[in-house]
Image (cartoon, rainbow over all chains, first blue to last red; front, side):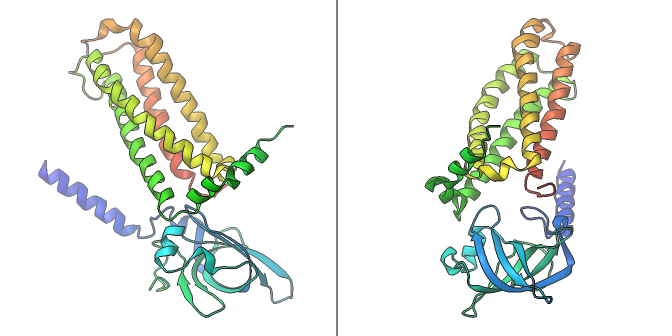
Length: 136
Length: 166
């Protein structure tokens, strides 16, 4: 019996170790780690909601057209702990967001780092995701 | 055609639903309570199902399994339903547009019908096999269907978190 329990704990540990991104939903199920993006634009609006927040921003493309991006963030609790407050973002402000593009949707990204106009930078990714140092 | 979307938008715009949706702690606590109470409820239902299909507790008389499990099943059903309804109410448009949510609701309805038929018809009529490890075919079916449905309900509930078909 003891051996069985030890084995089960070990198996669970091995499984979890293989899935560091297993948070609310796994990063890799939706986003592509090989498609990092840096978005510079203006904030249309932010939805400060559970289980994940959403940032809608307008980004000027190289050809001059404006593309509306949707960026998934972590939840209000996690962003609070990182020091970001709902009142820190104001519609129309300029933003820089680093993240990773969605596997299929070319206008959707998973946000990792948010830089406000005053220069303050926040980690807005969920627990897990690619080990790119954005969360440090 | 009359749409329920305006009603859902009204619900989403209320002060208290917005407050829970945007909360640092409220929403995670409700969500955690939902998962914990589902574990309790589905776990107790699965214990009965395993007895019915003859995979576990076959040495326990069926009536005794039923008498012991049923009150706890109903007790766990209250918080799991209440927290589930609350999660929907604070973010109605998200669930309205999520295919896995509707799959889960349909499966829940089927599981409800299966349980009602078992408790109102099959169980009272077939009480004579109480001491036998083997139950009747209709009772075995009720357990097997319940096992399949609850597995599918839990999987579809988990999949609501993914926006694959939004």
